[in-house]
Image (cartoon, rainbow, N blue to C red; front, side, top):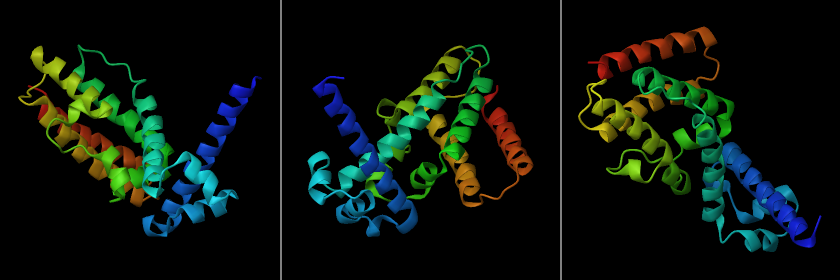
Length: 204
């Protein structure tokens, strides 16, 4: 291993340690308790080391959001979409998102329930034009646009529809994150009923 490769490996390791420590503090104690000094104490580095990699606390919080969002996005990008069955494809998109968020519950709780600015920047979905700035919203909107163009769904504004679908789904997912002891069979009943509503909303 060359010197440059070793340096990059060490850099990535330290950044990952900083982000993980910050995420844990956010989850355990909240944003107000988060500080560069506390992160340094968790990973047993000086504050100077952390400032070498991050400008301030807010930049670390954004890195926490980026790391979590990246993992979720990787999962939902695996969903195979059949343009001839757009509604089923959209359901599968949400099912994969649901599974990925529950498997990454700590990030999910931050993304769905936090009002921290650095986290909110990655979780925004209601702004007009968001499909041009959010990868996940862009994927969903594009699928709706394609299905609309073929007359397979009753949609007039694909982005607005994507926002409403996502908001509805977020509501259920947020409750399941909070009510973590909800039995799997009840989770399935709730999801099945939600998808019946999706059918009635989208299908001609």
